Image (cartoon, rainbow, N blue to C red; front, side, top):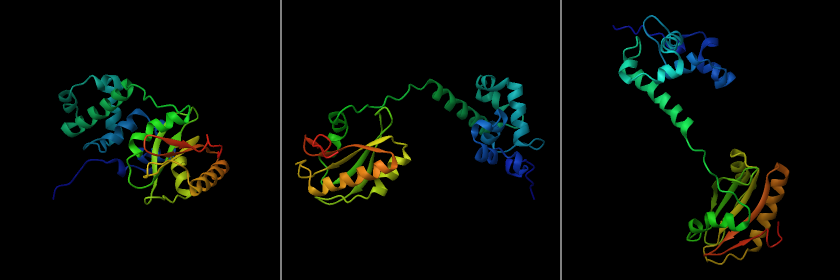
Length: 230
């Protein structure tokens, strides 16, 4: 019967296992060799993954030296081979792309028009009521537009729990409530006003301000903040 002599990370003492250390202390607590060992997963017949990773980094001259090696040169390192060489190059390429990525530009909401323009073309044609929230950071930049509920032709029941679960998950400083009227008439109903007030109260308790509630119609909208309801 064939015996696998490779020493895997999971066979190391618990306090030396990079995965356990990362879960307990975070990624910043890990050394370069521990990070590389997590990528490689296993060592060879003579070395565990940590020892092999330390050797590879030392011989290559660190990450920068490792990044300068071709796939073939990586394959020729003792204990690497094609699969691990590809894993190392994929890791280094991810790092390179992150370092050179252009910072994402987030839309900023300064007035109801800004928010309405971001969702109008998507929401004006919906044939049922959709309730969504626009999550904002502390600079009023849009973190995302999140679906909360889908209802019928004239109602989309929402609960504060569902609304603020998404806001909290995205670390929103404030939110804008959004829902459409399939009829095309954005005039707020009594239920719209009641839901807005209830959600604003819940937001106050949670420290997440409800900036506005926009009712989206066909090429037009109503801002409940402009109506004095918020």
